[in-house]
Amino acid sequence: MLSHLMLGTNDLEASRRFYDAVLATLGAQPAIKLELGGLTRYLWTHDGTNLMVAQPRDGQPATHYNGFTLGLKAQSEEQVQAALQAALAHGGAQIEDPLGWRDSGGIPRYLAYVRDPAGHKICLGYRPGGLK
Image 1 (cartoon, one colour):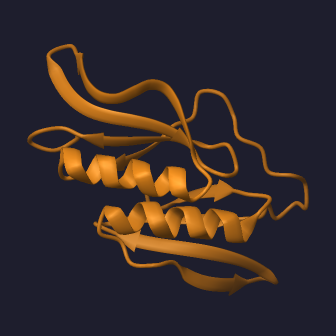
Image 2 (cartoon, rainbow, N blue to C red):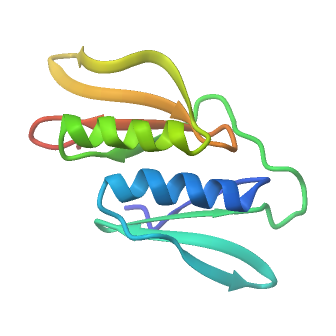
């Protein structure tokens, strides 16, 4: 259903380093640098999903917003742990409940929540049988 997700940032290189490190733990290759219409974007493509980061086209500062969460799918508890460590080592900050198992409506999930360098909320998640 989705073609891509674009996240705004005020520090393009900090965001690139953060997502290169975190997404590598989930099996993605480093970002591809795109120059489109005089603006630089970084693009990651993995498992049928495209994620981009860029400075806003309108020249206004990028901000994070309450209520939005970018969910990144992991294949194991260890992959969630590795992604969390990469996030923390590259400017991320752990938020909300600590890393661990949660059960919501009989659906067990292993989750960690972080904010990226631009303040976007990221959920790193594993669910046996896959996140749907």
